[in-house]
Length: 242
Image (cartoon, rainbow, N blue to C red; front, side, top):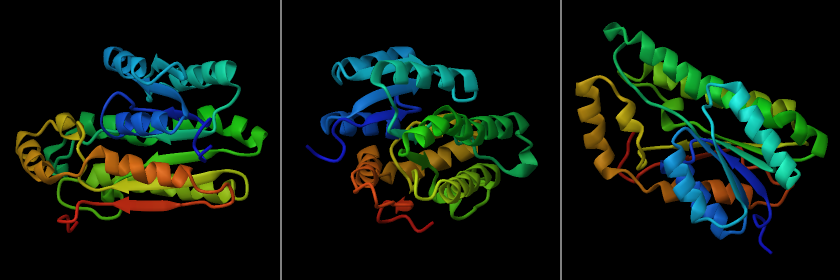
């Protein structure tokens, strides 16, 4: 039995990209999966190919009640949640002067509040179990800022800050990992509403690494002995300088 087999893992944003790759990799290792996303057609198709130990439900991470309901359902069916992967995120980058206020609000709601909602849905139960693992997907944009990424980077810096605060509050009880992907194959560019930035991003993403590379990093963190906490992982394409 490997260190992942039998673990109950809840994943947000599981219908595509990194979330989907994590689900497939974890299923292959014998994990029990709890999948959340808004697109139920894709989620149902994914879950159907992953075996009987997969629970899925429509969930919008901006709605706390959605994640609370899914976590409750997971505990009723499987008895516990061992790992949460807070993966859902959007990236509608733009210059501050362009005033894309609605995009800013959506990023704050999904990228920050969504992470907090996921943590809230599982944390007290994990503390009661005396163990657990929370993995938050940040970004290399959470390590540095460039023109157009001020708000997006702000949300991803926030994810790292939340993770570190959580780690300190739960030291000795719950493992906390932040994963910072570089350019990775996903649907992030589809959320960009400013045409010039979308075109530029799509060009950059032509050299993106597979989402499987990030999933492998996540599996590495989960698969460590219980007394080992991998707190931060950065994974970039070899060519990426930022």
